[in-house]
Image (tube, rainbow over all chains, first blue to last red; front, side, top):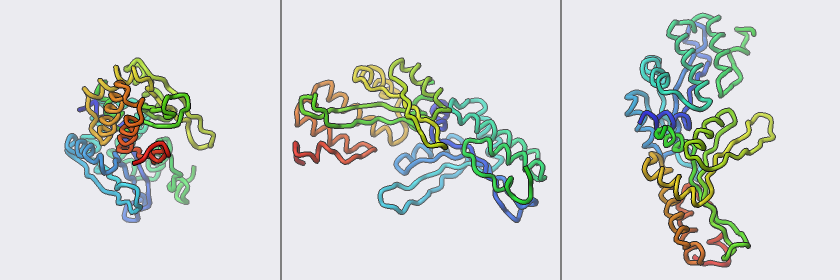
Length: 151
Length: 151
């Protein structure tokens, strides 16, 4: 089962960290790490296998309203405790074989920094934003481009 | 390694059968079964792992000429002998967990029929065309819609 999970996540998984505006946080920006595996309805069972194995996380549905596409299901682990105690140790022990391993390494680094509360000051947040830019799903960093920071 | 391969193929693999016109065949149609795993350049290594494990098949490159996309690599097993002797026994013994299992079951059925030479008569070919329509990548069957057959 462990091997299957690693292979399946190498195929369909995603370690992502988003950084978005949230006025309720101290700096006005929220760091949002997430482990996600996406699947269509007819293979939802494979997400149940993950949820059962890790014994954490939730399965969300993305409704599709166009005719010819199925609904998309997403298995997500979002709480920092579960990421720190369950997801990260698993993939540290059972290493990914694709380029997703690089994303995982950065993901782990960011969670470590969050656990040391580094994201609660602007310098730390900038460091995190720069790490996010090194991840596969490069997005234009709204934080790094904002008036609140400079490169 | 076996578990990883099954999980990875559940994520990125594809069992497909195409049916296209080929005037050099007896009936003018060729049945083309293929086991394919697709990956971007930065994870090509994972395709090497498959090729090494199965000790068959080839890796092809799909060049991309747009700026922001990587080249796509495809690990393909296409010879009926290798599909029959290597790929099918592997996935028969190590079962897929997603809806791809359904495609695999049909794929196996078609290869069995081909090994019994059923595709060399029109009735058999029609049977195969109908099985292909039950696979995930439903395509409009040119064969079933052609003047050479009727539903």
